[in-house]
Length: 343
Image 1 (cartoon, rainbow, N blue to C red):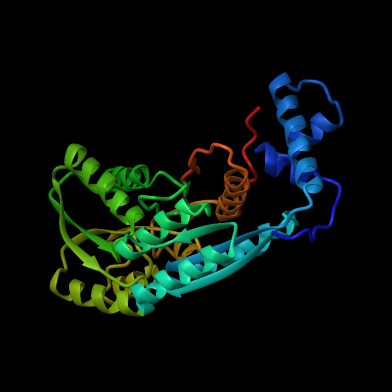
Image 2: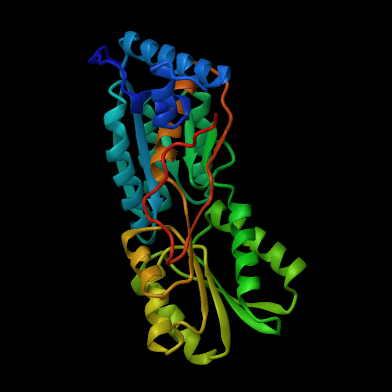
């Protein structure tokens, strides 16, 4: 750590970020307006103390972001990080990413090891892997916490993301309600051994088995999270399986699936549910190429990673930070919400 740090006065946005309250609530507290609960006022005061402590610590924290994921998700995290980090002058970051179709297990593990040696904390996105798990365990033993973003690993210091079992269960519930009550086939699409995908599958299959036994999960196609390759796989599958009723994609490559459905004249006839709200998937919703997209507030997740890292480096106890699961249809507003107003 270094002593390079520029002090600033807290903004309403700073206090909202630290307290988890909305900017409107913080404004009411700071301006002593009536109707504010005592516990809300105390949360704002505690946030002010935390901000002051950060400003007076004189210490710069370095957090390494190391991602192995699909290119769309990598860009999503990178954009959120750029937006959030300006509000944390005491934190510097590095950002390394490897598209999962280019991943070399040994090289990725060595990259992770290098970043651990250079940083105060690491935010990691990675599939389940023996070498990666070993590096995460070693990092913790050496005093460098590894926070897993979006998909957890066995030896992480904490997890930040949505409850993925719940996400899969909700996908099954919506799909089952949207389809007619008769026997039908459902296509399930995954990519690599990411725990979040396995948890989505667990929730999805559980609800399908218990509430919609007439729906058969006939196939499980493994893509590489990229649209071009996913398109080829889905196109080939659809040519041999014209009677598919729905598709649930827990991986990347949504544009490839939509393209294959359109070319096989199945767009609008097949229910399509997927994950990750991006510029492309928003357009797909608006054009009826996908029915439902599950998403999450990436900026809030980055903020949670920063907060957890600060606490972990100080030796303070933490708990994993579960974020709300967001659901989008073509009728949704696509601007992400402000921090929850938890008065």
